[in-house]
Length: 140
Image: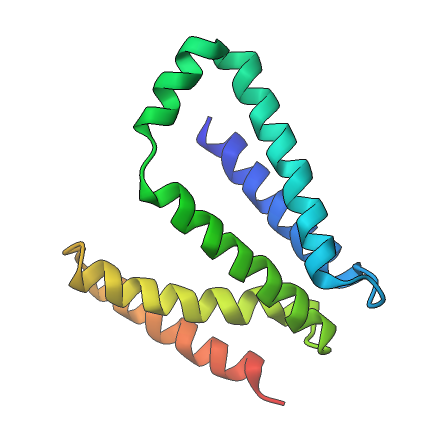
């Protein structure tokens, strides 16, 4: 089952960046994202009502905390950031690679410092290769 979700995430990531790259420049980015979020809200709310029912929906709502709102803020920044990045002419072939590489390095530091994750020598070697690769692809 993990492979199904991995493939889903990969296909969705590719589609996400392609759709953002081809979003018309004449379209207001704020309105475009508002329509996107409205459709997403309808889809997820409909799926919740269809699968949970009213009673379970109430229980599920009570289980939510600050993370749902924080994730909404993060998604707004992520979507707007990528949309504007591509509108300013950044290459779609490098957008995800550069941002994810830098984000991965930041998460690596956070994982080790905050979550007490451990790195092996092979992990460190891979990190160094990623840093060199990031430097190589981001050169102009």
